[in-house]
Image (tube, rainbow, N blue to C red; front, side, top):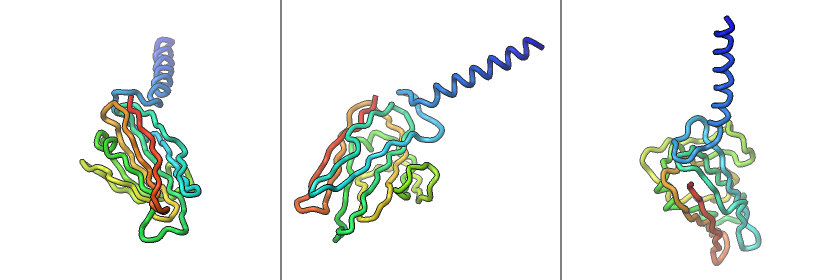
Amino acid sequence: MRTVAGVVAGALVSMALTGAALAQQESGKVGSGPPEDVFLEVTPTDGAITLSQSEFTLAQGGYYRFNLICPVASDVVNEAGIGFAAPTFWKDTHIRIVSVSDSTTREQMVPEINFHMQGLQVGLIECEGFAAAARVSFFPMRKGTYPFTVINDTVDPPVEAAGSFIVE
């Protein structure tokens, strides 16, 4: 009886330790479970743009959900907006889901529209005047440093801000 209790206790401790280890992204292994959220909030300020973060460090093969938080712009005309481009990054990722959701919450369980992707890339994500979050769930597949650009076309001339994804 003591042997069975010892085996059960050992299994429970092992599962607890394994669960804690699996909660972190490990480079080189494809992630599972829910994606880890990363956020980029874009704020237009007096003819410029401010990024909440300009660098994201990710694990190769980890599972992430990139959340582009779009600003509300009441003066957006002629489809001008805030654009996010990271073409070399998206080329080296496996994209699972692209979605649009409410930007007022950072909860995972919010109403959203999901586009289940297979074998396609994201060219440009553009926010055109309403508060929403554009979300892309993905696995980064190659190590490297990948630049991204955020363009504010609501001003003349357009302004840019830059950042990078670092996949280790």
